[in-house]
Image 1 (tube, rainbow, N blue to C red):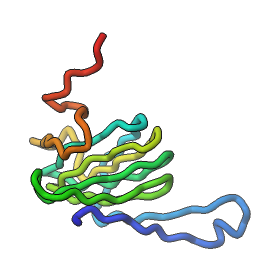
Image 2 (image 1 turned 180 degrees about the horizontal axis):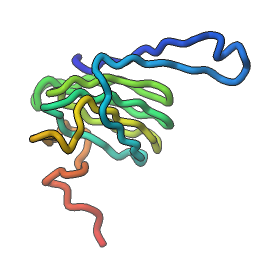
Image 3 (image 1 turned 90 degrees about the vertical axis):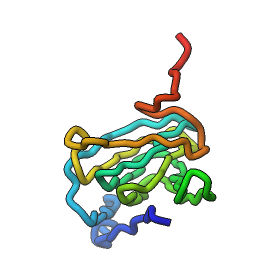
Image 4 (image 1 turned 120 degrees about the vertical axis):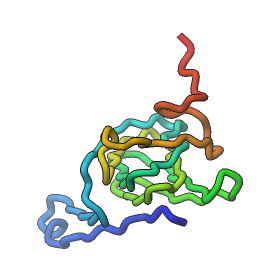
Length: 142
């Protein structure tokens, strides 16, 4: 599987002081853009790959699964994610996030979307249709 679940570091002093905890993630490449998103329960974000940048995805509330396939015809693999967990998706890796509950997340990119010649290539990975820019998505009925 190309998608990697990230393990944060924790300074135990931030837990011992009784105020909570600070969990730190270290990306392999510099982050140049980040997006805050809402994903409703049982909806998807993805069904695509990014040919020009890596994506880091941090769930800030809720739970879901990040699904990937090596090819459209291959068996899917998944990583379960819940609040505070993150994954790294290298460029060229097909992926889709399926929200089990209402979720919020932050997607962080290693290249600015608007600087890409081709920022996204859509493919249906079998987890449901619909995504920003998906040419087959007809939108809600008015």
